Amino acid sequence: MHHGPLIAILVAGLGLAFVFGALAHKLRISPLVGYLVAGVAVGPFTPGFVADQNLANELAEIGVILLMFGVGLHFSLKDLLSVKAIAVPGALVQIGTATLLGMGLGYLMGWTWVAGFVFGLALSVASTVVLLRSLQERRLVQTEKGKIAVGWLIVEDLAMVLALVMIPAVAEALRGAQPGMPSPLSGQFDLGLWGVLGFTLMKVVAFIAFMLVVGRRVIPWILHWVAHTGSRELFRLAVLAVALGVAFIAASLFGVSFALGAFFAGMILSESPLSQRAAEESLPLRDAFAVLFFVSVGMLFDPGILLRAPGPLLATLAIILIGKSLAAWLIMRAFGKSNAVALTISASLAQIGEFSFILAGLGVSLAILPAQARDLILAGAILSILLNPVLFALVDRFVGETGSVRQKPAPAEAAPATATELEPELDIVPTTLSDHMVVVGYGRVGALLGAGLLARGETVLVIEEQGDAVAIAKRDGAELLRGNAADPAVLAAAGLGRAKRLFVAIPQSFEAGQVCEQARRDNPALPIVARAHSDAEVAHLTKCGATLTIMGEAEIARAMLALCGAGEPPAEGEPQPAA
Image (cartoon, rainbow, N blue to C red; front, side):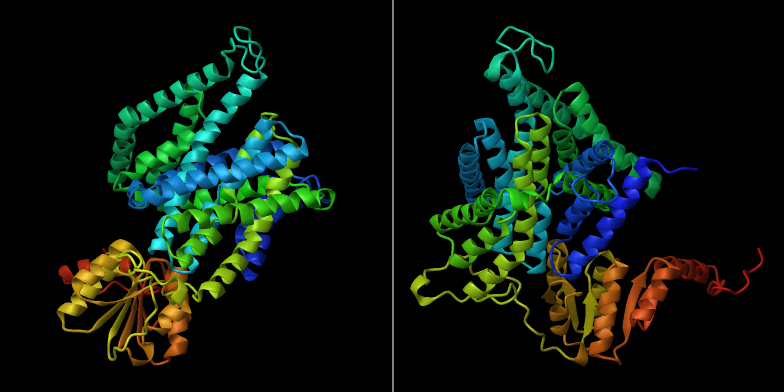
C-alpha cells in the first residue's frame, strides 16, 4: 500500500515538530518556535521534502477551529470584569497604537491602507500560548499583574475575533463593483462598504442570538446526557463534534467565520459544570492540530526575507517590541500602577502569535495583504517569541524581582500602596514545620486525604496552585505553599528533610514522577505515597522513587471484596479464583 500526501504531511509535520520543539524546549525557548521551524523545513522555500500546501491549509483550518474553541473554553467574563477598568481601555489603546504604526510602515512600503491596517492589526495582538506560559513559569497568573495581563489578552482576542468577521466583508466591498452591480466575489449585488459591513453585522448578531437562545440550551444538554452514559470515548467525541459542528454551522448558515463559531461554542460550553472535563478531553487533539497549524504557517515563511528586507523587518520588530511595550507601559503608569506592574505587562505583550498568523493568512487569501507583509509578520513572530524571555529577564533585573521575590520600589517612586498592590505575589517562603505531612495537590483525592490527616491531629502542608483548591486548603486549616510542586524551588521550601511523609495526590503521572524524583534526592529516607491509574504508571512512579503507589481501581476492588469477606484480589500473575 502506497502512502498518500496526507500521511506524508502528518508524519513529516508532527515528526519534525517534535524534534524542533524538543530542541526549543532544551534551549529554554517556546516550543512554538520549533513548530514554526518545522514548517519552514518542509515548506517550498527550503530544499528537501516539500509537503502538500493544500492539505496543510485544510489541517490548519481544523487547527484554527480547535484553537478558537480552546480560547472560548477558557474565556472568563469574571476575570475580565475584575480588571475591566484597566484591561479594556488599555488593550484598545494599545491595539490602536500598533495598528497605526503598522499602517505607517505599510505606507512607507507602498501598500494600500487596507493592507497596512491588516498588517498593523496582526502586530497588535499577543500570543495566548506564549503569554500564559511566561506568567505560569513565574507564578504570576493569580497576581495583580497576571490578572491584568490575562484580562488584556481577553480583550485583544475578542477584538481579533471581530476583525476576522469584518475583514472579509471589507475585502468583499472593496473588490466589488459599483453599488447595485454584481460583486465579482459573491455574485450578489454589491451594497457598498457600509452596506456590506451592516449586512455582516446582522449575520453576526443573528448567529450570536442563535447561540444564546438555542446553543445555550442544546450544547450543555447534549454533554450532560453523554456524560451520564459513562462513556469517556463518547464524551470526547461529543466535545469535538460540538466544536467542529458549530463552526461549520456558523460558516454555512450564517456566513461568519469558522473561528467565530468555534469561539462561541467554547464560550457557551465554558458556562457548563462540565467545561473543565471538556477542556481536558479535547486537549490532546487540540494540541495536535494546533501543532499542525503552526507547521502550516511555517511552510508559508520565506527565510529569504531576512536578507531581502532587513530594514522593514527591523521596523516590524520595533513595533512589536518597542511600540506595543511603550504604549502598554504608558497606559499602566497613567492608571497609577507601579513600575514593576507596568514593565511586567509590557514584557508579556511584546510578542505576537496565533491570531497574527490567522490574520496574515486571511489577508493574503483575500488578496488584500501582500506576501511580503505575511513574511514580515511570520519573521516578527518568530524573533519576538525568541526575544520575549530576554525581555522578561531584563525586567526582572531592572525591578529587582524574579517572579518569586516581591519588588521593593525605589524611594523616589514610593507612593501610598493600594490594597490590591499589597496582596502577596506568591512569594516562596520556606516552611518552618517539622514532622509534618506534605500533600501535593488538593483536588478531589488530596482534599479528602488532607481533611482526614488534619482530623487525626497531623500537621499538614499543602502544595497547590489552583485558586479553588487553595481556598479549600485554607478553609481546612492546612498550611499552604502556593506553586507547582514540580518546581525545585517550591519543593525545596516544603521542608522535606524534616517531613514525616509525602503524599503525591496529583493525577498527572509525568509531573508526579518529577516530584517523586526530586523529593527522593532531597530526602532518601522519606516515605513517598503516590497515586496512579494504570500498572504502567505504578511502575513509572516506583522507578521515580515512590515508596508506595496506590492504583484507584485496585483499591476499589479490594474494598468491594473485603465487604464480601473475599479477601484481597490476587496479585498480578497469580491464578484467578474460581467462580
